[in-house]
Image 1 (cartoon, rainbow, N blue to C red):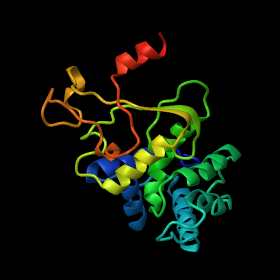
Image 2: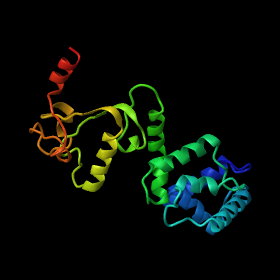
Image 3: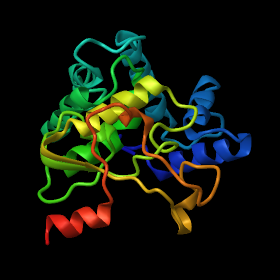
Image 4: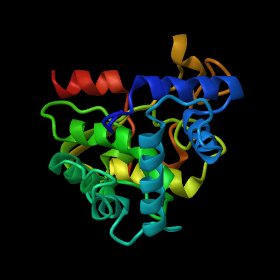
Length: 231
């Protein structure tokens, strides 16, 4: 649709092939290309030339097996804008560079692509005034005056059957964002729709996250604390 002369007629032709063969659009496109697009509309010549150009670009820009040292965002910007793959706008390039500092390290390219949208939303929230609600991982690199981490209960943090080292790292990221105030909340007992969160026994008595055991943490009843704090 971005190339003049290749429009809805050709796209519908590929969609029909995909439905008939129960495949994805991209797979149907490549399969049809290999058999020279039988019964295709007149725009097939332009589509064939476009695919050949893209294949040539891919051959000249082999995908890396490991994340480059400066990040996938820099890799994308450096390898686009040569007429085949459009260069990102200045705003998009800025976002990709920023995500290199937020995204996981040593991840594959497809994993990086899946993180662009959620991390981009977290970054937009981070730059907005007022209260920001985000994941602990999305708060990486930010500093705020006060942080509230909700649901810090055993069974929720750490998550069941998760890597304890990674869960501990995420909690550390969340707790070290605050410059002045850090509050962590947890419920001794849950009722209603949230009663099943993180616990196999509904309404059972709960404990705070075991990562806090032995640390310099003071626990107090939330309602009492708020009443005394702003009395």
